[in-house]
Image (cartoon, rainbow, N blue to C red; front, side, top):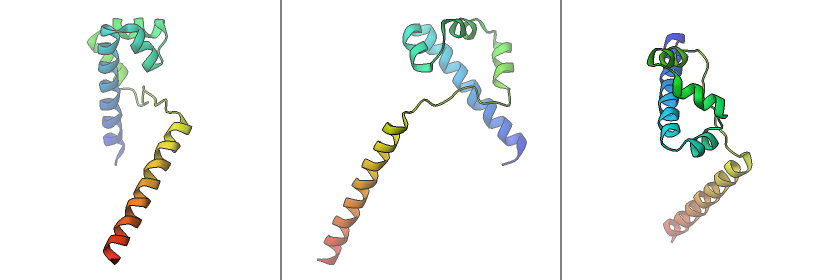
Length: 98
């Protein structure tokens, strides 16, 4: 990908995140703050942004959101799926050999 394409993708991601954040903050502010990891001040700021300010913020070259996954939970989930896939492959091999 080229730089223009990368920046466009970041802008699109940022705009989607900002629109989602504003929508969930408007519907259930306390839960949204918890799920998004936002302080009360940051939530206030996001809700007060004008459309022009939102677009300018989204156009930043930095990704505004972050993923808060527990490494243990993520690795555990991958390990379970990996073991299930391996067991399924072995079962298929046994059936094909029979």
